[in-house]
Length: 147
Length: 334
Image (tube, rainbow over the protein chains, first blue to last red):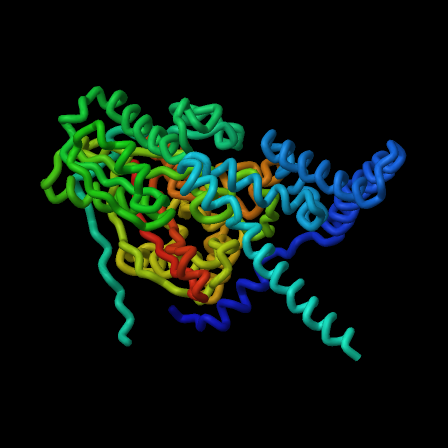
C-alpha cells in the first residue's frame, strides 16, 4: 500500500460521520426524562395508596423492571432505545433490558448453557464492578468514620 | 518486503448459466425490491433458530438456481459456499441435503466473489462442467454472534453497517452465452490498522483499492473502460475512502463506482446507518439485479469487487485490528 496506516487513520477520521448530537442529546433527555417521570409518578401513586416510602420506592423499581422486561419481550424496548440512546440505557429499565434480551436470544441454546449462562453477558460486568466499587466505598467510608 | 502484484486469471470458457437470490423483508423493501427470486417475509421461514433460517436461505437460493437450469443436484460437479457464522454452518447445514461435492470457503463478506473466482477457474480449467457458488448472511444470526442480542437497546454509531438477510447463488458453466466471466484477481490481506468494529467500511477500503488497482494494471484497463465497478459492502465511509485512495493517484472512479451496501437498502428511510453488509449483500444485488443487466447487454463490461472484513471478536477484544480483503471478478456481455 502506498499509504501509511497513520495517514489512512486520519483519512478515516475525516470520512467517518459523528452522531448528530443536536438530535441525539435532546431525544435522550426527553425519553430518559419520561422514564424517570414515570418512576416518580409511580412512587407518588404507591405513597398515595398508603405504602411506606421505602416500600413504595422498592415497588417503583420493580414496576419499571417489569415494564422494561415486558417491552423487551414484545420487541418494543429496543425500538424506543433507537431514539432514546443513553436515555433508555441508563435508567433501571436499561439494566432490565440488558438481562432480558440475552435471556430471550440464547434460549435457543437451552436453559442451562444458553439462557442461564448467557443471561448476564452484558449486565455481568456492571454487577461485578458495581459490587466491587461499593465494597471499596464501604471501606473508605469506614476509615473516614474512625476519625 | 517487495510488493507482490499477484496475477489476474483470464477465463475463456466460463459463463454464469443461472443465478438466483433469496432475501428477507427489509431487503425487498429496499430500492431493488421485487427483483429477487424469493422473499422470506418473517426472515425465519418456519425455522426454529436464526442459524437454521440462514441455512434455509442458502438451500433455497441453490434450489432456485437448479430449478432455473432444470438440473438435478447430481448434475453439479462442485459447490463453493461460505458465510459469516462460526464454522460456516449456514453453508454446511444448508447444503448437506444436496450431496454435491462441497468446498467450504471463508472470505467474510468477500466470499461471493471468492466463490465466483473459484467456480469460474474450475470450469475454465475443465475440472468441473458445472460449479455453483453460493453465500448467505442473516442479520439476526450475525448480530448474536458478533454483537449484541437482538432485543438489546444498544446504540449503533453512524459508521456501523447493517448485515443483509439474503443469499445469492450462481451456476457457472461453459454456455457460450453472457454473462461471461472473463477474469479475476484474488485479493491480499490488507491491514489498515482499523480497530473499530463499527467501521467495517474503513477496514475494507484499502483492500478494495489494492485489488482493483492490480486488476487494472494486469488487464491494461482503466476505470473508465468499465460500465460499472461494483464493490461489495464498503458502505458510505468505505466508498468515500476508496474514492480518496484513487484520487491520490489522480484517478476519479466516482462516476463508475456503485456499492451494493449503498444500494440494497434505502438509507434515508431504512435505519441501516452507513449501509448494508454481509456475504448476502453483494450476492443478492448481483443475482437480483446486476447479472440480469449484464445478460441483457445493458451493461457490457463490469468489474465486481466484493470486500470482506476479516474480523474476529476475540482478537478485537485482545486489542487487535481488522484486516480487510477484496476479490475482483470481471464480467462481460460479449
